[in-house]
Image 1 (cartoon, rainbow, N blue to C red):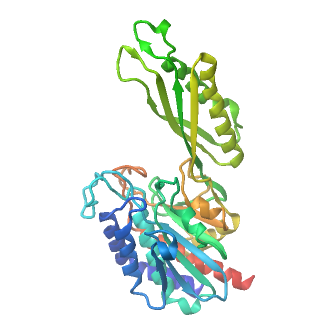
Image 2: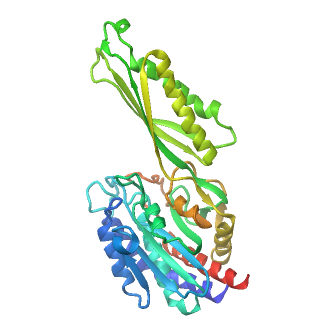
Length: 404
C-alpha cells in the first residue's frame, strides 16, 4: 500500500460521521430529475469549504441548471473523471427513521444521496493531497439520471455535448447494491447493465356491441396474437447467447363490459446488451404488430430510445481491482453482470474508458428492499469505503500513468 492510498483510507474513516451527515441531509430533501436546485446548492455550499477548488455550476457554465462540476489538480498529467448522480425518485418513503424524506412523494430510493456524499468525501480527501496529484480530477455531480426531459434526454448527454468529457482518459462511478452486504462488490469487464428502449403500440379496428362480436373487428382479440408473437421474440428471434428482454407493462383497451373498443394500447420495455440485439428487438417488435394488419386492423408502433448498455472497459476495471486489493483485500468480488436495469453513466462510458462498480450496501441482519422500493435504505458503513474507492481509483490511475 502506498503512503497516499493509506492516507486516503485513514482519511475516509476519519470523516465517516461527516459522510453520514451529508448523506442523511440529502436523503431528507430529495429532488426529482432536472429539479435538484436545493441539492446543487448543498453541494456548492459544501465544496466552498475547499480553497483552490474550481467549481462550475448552472446552465451557463455546465449546460444544466442543476449540475455541479469541480476540478482539482494540475494540467501536467491525465484527466480523470469521478461521477455521482444526484436526483431522487417519485416514491413515497415508508421507512421510519430520523432522516426519512420530508418531501411527500419523493425519495432517494436508488442511493444517489449516498453516491453524492461519497463523491464529496473523495473530493475532500483528494483536496488534502492535491500537491501530490499528477494530473487533474474532475468531479461531476450529475443531475437527472433517473428520468428524461421533454426532449427525451437524461442528464449525461447534455454534459457530454458541452465537452465535459473531452480530454478525459478514464471515468469512474459507484452504485449501491442492496442485494449484497458491505464487503461484497459486483465488478466485471464488458456489459454490466442493459440498453433500454420503451415502446407503445396501438391496434385500431372497428369496435361494437359485445353482444354482436361478429359485426365488429375486435382489437382486443387481435392484440392477443400480437402479444403472443412478442413473447416469442426473445426465445425464437434473438440469439440464446445474447441477453434480451421484452416486457409488457401496460395494456389499455375499453371501459365497458359490454362494448368492444376501437383500439388497444400496449406499452412496455425492451432491454439488451449489444447494439445488434437491440436493433433486432426493434425490428421484431414492429413485425409482431404487423400481425394486426393481416387481421383487418391497423397498427402503429413508437419506440423511444433510452440509454445504451453500460460497458465497463478492461482498463478501468483493472484500476478498481487494484484499489480493492490495496485498500480492502478481503472484499469478495462478484463478476456477474448486475442485470437488465439501465444507467445513463453508459453514455459517458461510450466516450472514455470507464467503470461503474456496485457496492454491497444491504443490512446483514434484515431482509432489504430493492432499488426503487419505498423501504430502500443502505448500511452506512459503506460510505467511507465508497469514498476511498473513488479517490483511490483517481490516484491509482494517475500513478500508473506516471510510471507507464
